[in-house]
Structure formats: structure tokens, C-alpha cells
Amino acid sequence: MPTATLLPFTNTPNRKSASPSAFRLTEKFILLLVFSAFITLCFGAIFFLPDSSKLLSGVFFHSSSVETDTKTGTDGNGSIHGAENDENKLTRIRKDHEKALSEAKDTLQKRPDEIQREIQNEKETVQKNVDVSRGGTGDDNSLPKINFHKPLGAVGREPSDLETKEKRAKIKEMMKFAWDNYQRYAWGLNELKPVSKQGHSSNLFGSIQGATIVDALDSLYIMNMQDEFKAATDWVEKSLDFNVNAEISVFEVNIRFVGGLLSAYYLSGEEVFRKKAVELGEKLLPAFNTPTGIPWALLNIKSGIGRNWPWASGGSSILAEFGTLHLEFMHLSQLSGNPVFAEKVMNIRKVLNRLDKPQGLYPNYLNPNSGQWGQHHVSVGGLGDSFYEYLLKAWLMSDKTDDEGKKMYYDSIQAIESHLIRKSRGGFTYIAEWKGGLLEHKMGHLTCFAGGMFALGADGAPDEKTGHQMELAAEIARTCHESYSRTTLKLGPEAFRFDGGVEAIATRQNEKYFILRPEVIETYMYMWRFTHDPKYRQWGWEAVQALEQYCKVNGGYSGIRDVYASHPSHDDVQQSFFLAETLKYLYLLFSEDDHLPFEHWVFNTEAHPLPVIRKEEETRSVENQLL
Ligand code: DMJ
Image (cartoon, rainbow, N blue to C red; front, side, top):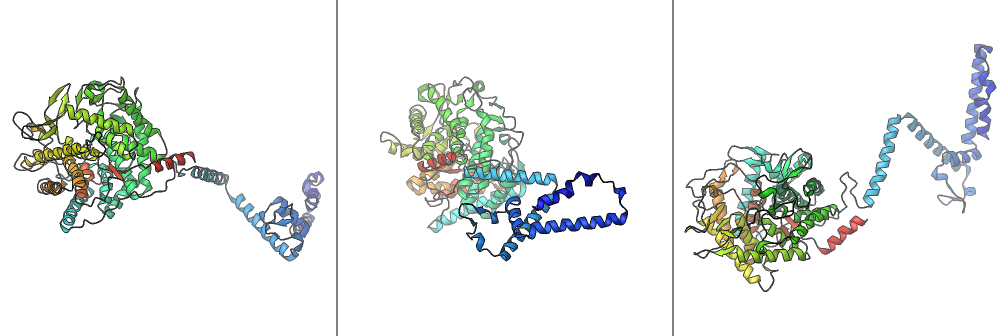
């Protein structure tokens, strides 16, 4: 055996113990030559004699190409050993030998840290493959694999008649003007100051930046502004950062950022939006760490410490804030495969359903520690509004399976009708505010969204009330339009009253401003879709003209301090919701009905479209988790 013949020369103790001084230099040299020749001969024997080479490659190098199936006596290629000629055998053995030598050389040349790294990489690759086969993406922020299908109606077509086409083109031009100026003067910041041409920061987002970019993403997509959408996507990818030490409004960040990212994902299928939405959703979870699970209004997303607005009744959380997380959180669970988001919002329902409601109404304040109502103030405008909206839309978004949401919505609307909705002497229907049993005959601009909500909910109304709900919706639309018509600048005030002999007019100086809000136009859009009454497009167009005439300034669009003044005094803020909502609803008002059709999409309260979750998709999501 060749290995045995080598042993005496390498390991014999005698040789090792011989003193070098016992030989002269030439003798030493000759001895070395003989020794080398012998070694070479032995190697030759190992590599080139057929029998020994078989042993070498089969046992020591364990090359797969010569592995033998012992049962059949064939190699991997099915050839019978005896049939392979010696020449071929030799070539194959030589190749295997060379390959083994070069692999060994590579390994020896590598430093131990490189080898370590390679081992680690290999481990990670194996782990990744395991994750992926379980349904993960393999990234750190592991998300289930999703076969993205664009929901129906994400892309619209041109309106069929020329006039509508031109009007819609004008609205797109407005969007471009608002966007271009933001990009020019405030890129990456939250909002634009269109008069002073610089960035505007709002406490609502702490030090999270880019509110206008994220809020505008879906409007850019819907309006087919591809270059702008691409620039916004790149910014989200590279610069949108949630690892900040910042106290934020949970509600605002949810409706604008989470909602904006979710819509951008569902419209475009770009994975970055899903990843960012889930990442942000996870940052919001500590807000629910209260004794009842009713979330705090404010949260430091680094420390996870939450609190409520200092002005809110007895440390309460606000109905419209904790009640406006449902749609986004259901989608976060759907897209992440993590039920925690859905569990959090379903728990809010549970807490609310355990409580007695004064006259069936939901007060605006709820203490997250005690689980008891604060002041008994009720409003379908500020502090209450989108809570009602989300009950209805939760039912619609669940493919009409969320019966609890449905019941809560229709029950609450019945109580609102009985206790809050009134008709003025001049015949205008309005929704008043309720303060511990007393009515304040004022309606906010924010409350005007309710026209659209009643229209959207009319179809599912119990006891043949469909027609009645549609009438109510039309009346609210008319009242809100009236609040615009009665101003000098033809844009509506923040709140208008029905007392002291006035109707649909702001009487207090601090209620006369207009900050580019969408609610009135939102209602026109719903009414148009459900009735096709041309007056809604006409009213929408009046608003476009007023916006162009009074809100457009050199550097974008600005709010106005007093809509009754003869000349506009600008507040110098281009709100992000102007791009997210006001312009989007205007654009859809002049689009065909099959662009973001209501059977397939619901709009979150910031006008970000979210697809209806079909029953079979829910099953698919569960399957993903089980993989
Ligand atoms: C938007 O951020 C949302 O519509 C919210 O529900 C209420 N207010 C603003 C716009 O007015």
C-alpha cells in the first residue's frame, strides 16, 4: 500500500534522531536527492497506477463522479466498471485529482476569517431558503410571499366627452403645479409654504419627513404622472426613515403614511411600499399598551412611550383617532401575515361594545386607563367624524362580512338622526354637535364628508331606509354647497352656524378660514357616482375655479384666512391632504365610474384607496402563515 511505504521515511524515530553533523555537505545533498526521487516515485504510484487511484479518488476525495451504486455495480452514469477502458479511466481520475488539488489549494490560501465568513454565508443562505419555503421573503423584515394581483380599476380610461376630459386635464395640471412647487422648494420635508417658498413642518409627524410625498403617491399614480411617481418611489426607498426619536400623532401618521404606503402598494405592486407600511405599523403598536388597549393619541416611536393630548377631557383618547385605525390595520395583517394588527383594532370594538352609550351616541372622549367615557360631547365633525366612516367602510372592505361593524354603523346613524340632525328654517338639513344633551347648531367643514358617507351606506341600510339615506346625503351636499356659495371667495368656512338668524354662515372670526380641505368635494364625488346628477360636477367645477382664483400663488396652493374678505389673505401652507384628497376627489369626480370602482375599493379617511378583502384572499393569507 503506498501510504504504508511512506511511513518509515516520515515517522521513523531513528532517522529523526540522527545527528546532521554525522554527514558531510555533499553526502547530505545526495541523500536529499535520493529522498526526493523516492517521494516523487511514491506519488506517481498513487496517482497513476489504476488500482491505487481508484482507492484514492473513491475514498479520500470522495468525488461524486466515481461514487458507486453498490447494489447495481454501476457508476452515476450507468456504465459498467469493467466496460470502461483504462485510458478513459485515467483521464477521469486525473481530472478529479486536479480538481481536488485546486480546491485544496484555494482553501489553504484563504485566511481563517474568510473561511469563517464563507461558512456564515452558507448558513445564511440555507436559513434564507428555509424562510422562503415557509412563506417569508428572506429579508430581515420577513414578510410572507404574495402573488400580487392588481385589484380591478386601478387604472382608468379617458372620460368619453370632451368637456369632462378637458376639466379633468385641468385638475391634473393643478396637481402638477402643487407637486412641482413642493419638489422645488420643500422636497423631502413634510409640507410646502407656497408663499414663502420653503418647507413647512408639522408636529403631527414628529421628525418623520416626507408627508407630502407619501400622501401624494397614489394621486400621482391615479393621474398617470409616471415620472413624478417614480421620483416619489425613489425617495421612499432611499430616504423615508422611521428610525427617529419623535413623538407623533398615531392617527395622522396612520391615515397619511400607513394609508398612503398601502395604497401605493396596491396600485403599483412595488414591494418597497408593503415593507415600509408594515415597518411603520409595527412602530405604532406600542400605542396600544394601555390597560384597556385603547391606544394613546401620541407616541414616541423610539421609546414606545405614549400619552394623550393635554387638552383632551380627563386624559382621554379621542374617538375619531382610535376609531380610525381599523382599515389600515386590517390590511397590515393581510400583508404581513401577522394577526396582531387586526387583534388590536378588534379589541377597540370590544371595549366600545361593553360600554353604555348615552342615547345610543358615542361620546368623543374615552379614557384608556379606566375604559370610561370622558365628557359627553358628540360630533360627526372634528373628534368624532371618521370613527363612523370606518365602521361602514370596515363592513364594505370585508366584502360585507363584518356584521359587527355594519350593526355599529347603522345603529349609530340612527342615534345621530334622532339627536343631531336638524332642518333650518330656510330648509337646510344640518348635523349639529351634542354637548351633554344640549345642541350646538353649528356644522363643521369636516362634517360635510357625511353626505358621501350616507350615500355610500344607503345601499345596506336596514328597514327599507335606502332611499331615505340617499335623500339625507343629497340634503347634506346641498347645505355644504350653500356654505360655499354664501362666502365672498366661494370657498367654505371651517364651521358655519344655524342660529341667531343666520344659516350656513360662519359668525365667529376664528371659524372663517379655509385650509384646502376636501370634505365638500368628497361628498360631491360620491353623489355624482351614485346619482349622475350633473349639478355635482358643476359644484365641483365652481370649487376648481375658486381654488385657481384665490388659493393659487406663485409657489403652489395656499389656505385662506377669511373666506368672507374681499381679497384672500394666505395662510402660507399647502396641506398634504390637498394633494392626497382634494385634488384626487376632484379628479375622480371628472373620471369614469370604473376608475377605482366602489365594488372593489374603499377610500381611507385620507382618500387613500384600499382594496376590498375578498374571502378567498383571507384564506390565502392564512395559508401563507401556515406554510
Ligand atoms: C384629513 O386629514 C382627513 O380627511 C381627516 O379624516 C380629517 N381631516 C383632514 C382633511 O380635512
